[in-house]
Image (tube, rainbow, N blue to C red; front, side, top):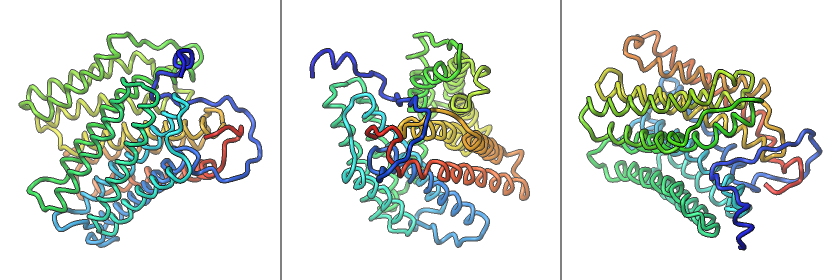
Length: 416
């Protein structure tokens, strides 16, 4: 590869191409295995609908809890938490990274049979986990992370972009935490199986901070005419650093010091978010969904600080992150990616607006349900049901609109 071609490569690992297409054309052929976002976004959306439906059915006694009892030492809660992090979220991360790496290097990480094999490993892990065959599920989950890591390593190595290997490191770390979860269950270790799941959520939090700092200002300036976001160089490194220190502090330090570090990290993230001028984005749903999702990050960090002081239960920051921040940012990215990489313009219709609002409502209601002052025999179940239902309907909207697109080739006839 010559120096000119190297200089023309995008350096933003997390960039997603934005299509300028304005007219749909008839399509033929089968497009599901052309690029990583297609099967994994489709699978993640469908699985999240199934998983939350089963979880609600279990909570309200419509489904025998033993149906989701994945091991003698675990509970349906462990299945729910594990599958939403290592099933749903990790599938979206896989689809995004497999697509983004192709976009900025021109090297295709996986398509055709390799992509289908990777997706099959993910599907079989979800199936056997649901059926209670934990050992088999662990094998397929480890194969999934191992193959995904190998595919990403190949692209990074060939492109010689060493500074972006930290993304591969985060994927491997997620795999290691998943292995720890399975080890606790299969070996009946005296440890809480929720602990590695919560650590994986914190890894995702750090990834969202890094990703958000790279793409949200860019998408804001591209999507909102005339806006000029404020993004000083000092915040580029300070925000991820403050977030990492807040997370480490919450895990290791005495309560008061841990709380202080989390609050400082929250304020730094809030300052960064204000600099993106979110009040100017209300008319652009493809932008405000990412802005609103990022707002949940300082909320999560503040909640972690309160949890360190035992002011709020641990489930509050967990769901502020998992439903609020992760849910909205994922929704914004899987719609944007599917539009851009199917040859469509990045435009938010009523379906996208409805989906984003429903996920936002789901996040607020689920976080409220964790507040001790609102936990009553009547109100708590109602909040949980409404939150879960909003989530399910939102991703049904996604499947309805984007499912056909993901199965078909691009409108413009280009690869991907």
